[in-house]
Image (cartoon, rainbow, N blue to C red; front, side, top):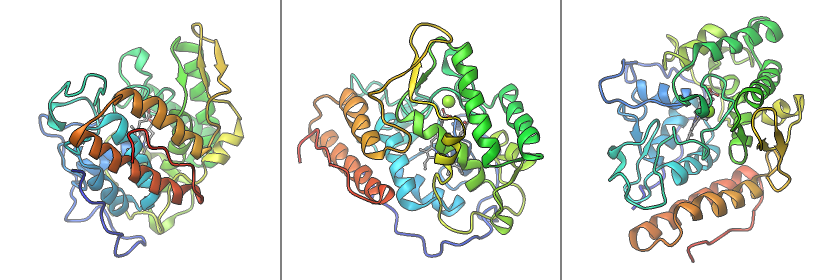
Amino acid sequence: EPAKLPPPMKSNGTKLVNDAQHPFKPLRPGDIRGPCPGMNTLASHGYIPRTGVASPSQIIEAVGEGFNMERNFATFITYLAHLSDGNQVTDLLSIGGKTSKTGPVGQYSKAPIGGFDFHNTFEGDASLSRGDSFFGDNHTFNETIFQEFIDFSNKFGAGKYNLTVAGELRFHRIQQSIATNPQMTFLSPRYTNAYSESAFPINFFVDGRHYNGQLDTTAARSFFQNMRMPDGFHRAPAPIGGEGFMQIGAAHPLKSGRNVKGVNSYKADPSQPKLGEFCKIYEDFVKNIVVTFYPKPTGDLKKALNINLGRLYDALTVVNGSKCPRLFPFGK
Ligand code: HEM
Ligand code: MG
């Protein structure tokens, strides 16, 4: 049965988080890391197990403690990831590749249980520091791609990564993928997540003591490449989520879609949720990902799925500021 959600944090201001209880340690053989610089860093500082395999509850607690990610926002994205990439019955999720450490491999015929690396559920194309899956590696830090992050910060942010830079770089990476990756796919939930994740470096990697929306590129590299908090790093001064993502989208509006016939054949799909259209994101996710992976669950699996879908929905209601129609694909 899924572990209880963590209690709300006792304090939610800034504080030293690269502290004596959470020292950076290099990887040991077998430790798993993946496409998310935030989660990689939390694992390398022991906020989640250093193995890189964790429960959703551990992840939600860690992103709050370590980065001050707002609890409901964190719960929503954690369950998006867990319901697509994790093991519902063992309550374990890999922050990188597929592993037997989350339970027997191939436990259910349709659910890949592939970890964060699994392509086109949560992980997707046009990332800021990783390559597209089509080119063979969607999870390892990629210096060539990260150099664009540096170049754009120099060109549009006087050496810092900020919302202006994010708007330009997000669009540029999408255009690059459209022009080079014949299978470029930019559908929900990747579409909204990609804009949200472009705001994360500003919201979470800027030190809480001088929280001015400007991330210097040395600190950026420390997180993105080295999975390490800078010395003395303090988390954000107040709980925060994907704030800024609508502004990043507005810099170069682009509809959700994909390359339909090789490179440079991007076509918008009008049936897709629009940017930040959370009720539709939820509906699309439940119908097209969860039900496809779990067509007819029974027993412990069905029970866990219903608990996890309930948590996703409850968190969404807070993030969205109003209720969306709830779906019960596996009964009440
Ligand atoms: C990207 C999962 C929290 C920072 C990603 C990706 C996944 C992921 C699967 C890969 C998407 C892609 O680029 O294709 C999660 C989950 C979280 C979480 C489930 C649970 C709360 C965080 C936090 C931070 C963070 C707290 C920052 C402190 C980022 C950034 C990217 C990213 C900056 C974009 C990387 C890039 O484009 O190269 N996340 N993440 N994430 N995540 Fe996380
Ligand atoms: Mg990616």
